Amino acid sequence: MSEFDEKFKHMETYIFELDELDRCRYLRYVASSILAKPCDVKTPDLIAMGDLCQQTEIVCATLKKIIVETEIDNIVCKKCEKRLPKMRLKEHLMGVNKDCPHDTIEILNDEEFKEESKKSCI
Image 1 (spheres, rainbow, N blue to C red):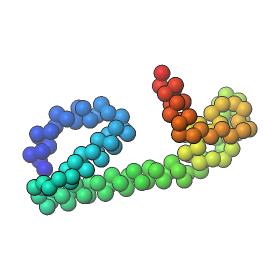
Image 2: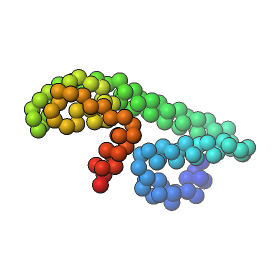
Image 3: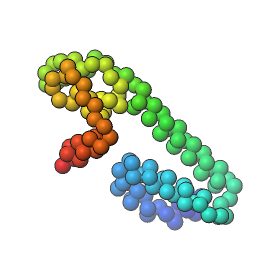
Image 4: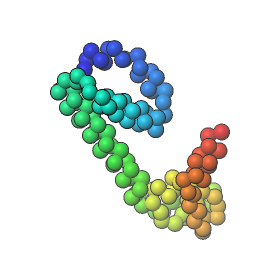
């Protein structure tokens, strides 16, 4: 593997310019491309690749579990001092009760979430 490290070291600068989602897409592309056709990868390298893929899966699954299952409570709006209702972290990140008053729940679907995300980046 060290021979590949030196050969492709320059690519790190390009990878670090990607956002997190694009890095994940790139990782999936590289992993699937390697195994898409017969190749002469040595057994220790295949085992190392498998270990890295498993570690990545564990981290991603843990992150997803945290976002989907974590319940948050006792959040107080800094603008109006009202307490937000109990919700999951996923709902909070999607914009539930993003605008005052906080006595109604507004859940954005995926399409609305993408549109709102674009607005906040501008």
